[in-house]
Image 1 (cartoon, rainbow, N blue to C red):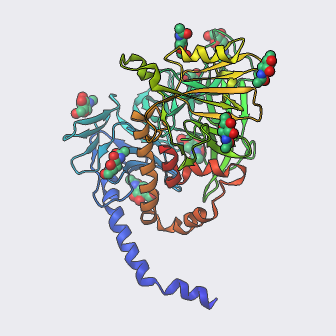
Image 2: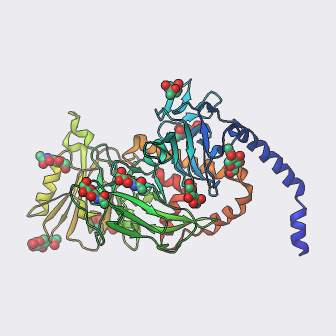
Image 3: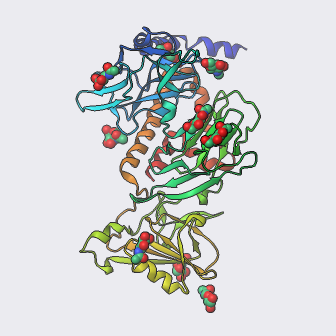
Length: 506
Ligand SMILES: *[C@@H]1O[C@H](CO)[C@@H](O)[C@H](O)[C@H]1NC(C)=O
Ligand SMILES: *[C@@H]1O[C@H](CO)[C@@H](O)[C@H](O)[C@H]1NC(C)=O
Ligand SMILES: *[C@@H]1O[C@H](CO)[C@@H](O)[C@H](O)[C@H]1NC(C)=O
Ligand SMILES: *[C@@H]1O[C@H](CO)[C@@H](O)[C@H](O)[C@H]1NC(C)=O
Ligand SMILES: *[C@@H]1O[C@H](CO)[C@@H](O)[C@H](O)[C@H]1NC(C)=O
Ligand SMILES: *[C@@H]1O[C@H](CO)[C@@H](O)[C@H](O)[C@H]1NC(C)=O
Ligand SMILES: *[C@@H]1O[C@H](CO)[C@@H](O)[C@H](O)[C@H]1NC(C)=O
Ligand SMILES: *[C@@H]1O[C@H](CO)[C@@H](O)[C@H](O)[C@H]1NC(C)=O
Ligand SMILES: *[C@@H]1O[C@H](CO)[C@@H](O)[C@H](O)[C@H]1NC(C)=O
């Protein structure tokens, strides 16, 4: 009793000081949005980032105060427009993930019918290109630009000209509609989710060529059929703990249930495409995000869990295809990766290319991999060896299947079966060069770094922004949070900013 009394009173001056500092930090933002009604901004609204705000500057809150739209500081000097889940400080949506502005008083965001970011110095510019009346943040985190009231059929509902739900980044929240024209993109830009005519597909972009599908969930069509000619399918995260796939009716053609299925939990539910390529669902328990669903349960079935030229063996984890090299800092780094860019270079000689052979390996997600049937291992190797765009091949002696790898070598699966033999091209003379596993780099890696830094900066400044939650969050960091269990190694990649960075750069 005495002890707790002491602990409350003793640091009172520190608390006062903290309050002063926080109210100073928050003051400019309350003023910025004071001009409009709760939940909406009108034409003429204008704001610039405040230099003293470390993490997030709210411009518009929803009616429930669960969500906030505002400036998110990225990489300490850059700015993204974001919708945040306030209790967790987790960004759910970014307006401009690939065209960040500067956190500077010359950067301006205004609403003149369009929501516009303008940056006179860099000329960076983002706009919704609409002619609306107001900007509204709904209580499901959807940011809308609305126009007037539509009285045409006596319903007083405004027309929606634009909404953030139509441009998801890496996250879907409950009630959000994901259609066949949309794409979810992981923060590192490597993985995407799209809909086919009767399935949900996850795709990897390992090079600039076509995407490789690595996970496919086909509609079960138990309660309703997909009928050709009735339009494309769409999916929606149901607050009752499932992902529903629909065609044009209200009866789902498929239900993918989460752990919280029909448990009627209060917390927000979201689905996110993670930087490791997994699709996961989480619900907000009030103090942390609890893992509710994972699409890919086995680490080795992820698209590239051990990086390029890696080998994932169920039960024993990552090693390297080339067993004379060691896996160091998550990379197999003794030889240079083969690239079919060499095809277009006339100076490339055949002897620039070395070959690595390894028994007991299989291609991952082989249902979706291209294969030929060849009578022998030698012919399988030749089919790849003679084709400059081929990166490698895996031969199954029992079936005669010759799987062709037509993208940069990623992680192969280890099996005890030595009749399955892999043939992989390596670039000669690049022995000391480090392998860069994320080959879709470019924008992808940038995007990853950006979100990492959002995470890192976010966590750092979070302590200042909402001191109240600090203890909880730190406890969570220490104990591994609730996102552990069998998926601990994977779950850790999502919300821990630091690990998110390492997996983003892998
Ligand atoms: C939005 O909510 C935050 C706290 O979550 C508060 O600091 C801020 O003043 C609010 N802003 C507006 C515009 O209501
Ligand atoms: C809003 O401002 C942008 C940038 O200045 C301009 O291009 C656009 O025409 C304006 N829109 C309206 C509806 O005034
Ligand atoms: C969100 O707003 C709608 C009306 O706009 C209301 O029916 C619903 O109950 C609200 N939901 C929450 C969680 O506040
Ligand atoms: C979701 O999108 C589909 C396809 O555009 C549309 O038919 C359906 O009405 C939408 N559902 C909701 C709840 O917005
Ligand atoms: C679905 O679309 C088809 C063809 O457009 C139409 O005939 C059918 O009535 C629609 N079903 C529903 C439930 O809207
Ligand atoms: C490395 O691989 C080669 C060929 O697959 C095999 O002969 C050799 O025993 C392996 N060495 C070790 C240390 O596993
Ligand atoms: C070479 O490989 C590419 C990619 O695997 C394939 O599309 C192409 O048809 C192959 N060319 C020949 C001549 O086999
Ligand atoms: C491959 O299959 C052939 C015949 O199907 C057999 O003779 C040979 O021993 C097999 N090789 C291996 C390594 O299993
Ligand atoms: C973040 O900042 C560092 C140092 O200023 C810079 O090197 C890096 O490129 C930045 N990253 C992004 C994604 O802008």
